[in-house]
Amino acid sequence: MNQLRSSWFAIAAGGLAPIAVAVLLVPLRDEIDNANLALILVLVVVVVASLGGRRAGAVAAVTSTLAFDFFLTRPFLSARVESADDIETLLILLAVGLLVGELAARARHARRDQELAASAVQRVHRVADTVARGEPLDVVLGSVQAELTDLFGLWDCWLERPPFLWVIPRLDRSGTVEGADHAWLDAGFALPRDGVELAVVARGDAVARLVLLAGPDTPASLDQRVVAVALADQLGAAMAAAGPDEIAALPIGPDRQP
Image 1 (cartoon, helix red, strand yellow):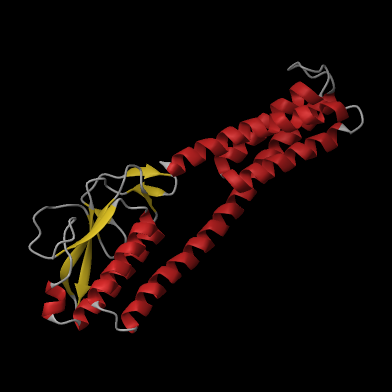
Image 2: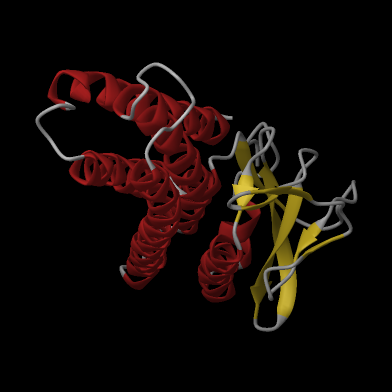
């Protein structure tokens, strides 16, 4: 939901920012060449696309073209254009704005992917470090739950041991969610709201499952899902090395009672 609001805010900013800049340029339109005024609006498109993404950049490109026509070309405050040069500038502004906005959006996505990859490595490393230090199994479980909750923005995350009382969609080792219809979002499909099962594997056998309870419209990219599997594997390795009593004492279920 927060991501959706952020996306709509970015699109709204993409529509309003070029208009605001064009209005500020009105006192300078007799002193600055129209081509340079258009370049200023292209810069606005770049900034919007870099901060808000592809859709916001496209909205900014179109709005910049309309604002340039309405505020900065003769006749002023009109959609008509008298000069052939101004028409050419308008078309170039639209084309360049869309192209540059797309490139800026791709660069933004590339930076985000790099940040997510680095964050994923840190998540797995933190849990692996907990296991390597020989922390108690319940501490390892808590660390995995915390990382999964933060990774997806979950409402809740708990451990269950077989036999399982209810059937829910499963997140398999390839990152695919089986047994659920997917509602697609910009950042990936939404996790099923009724819960997702993530198997905890120890020595090749599924000894438990983590239940991931997501809120509405919680996106889960493939990279995030693969990281979740890696985190569950860390818990499985810790459970494989633990004794039966320690495993039996683990808090299970949404009420966390062993």
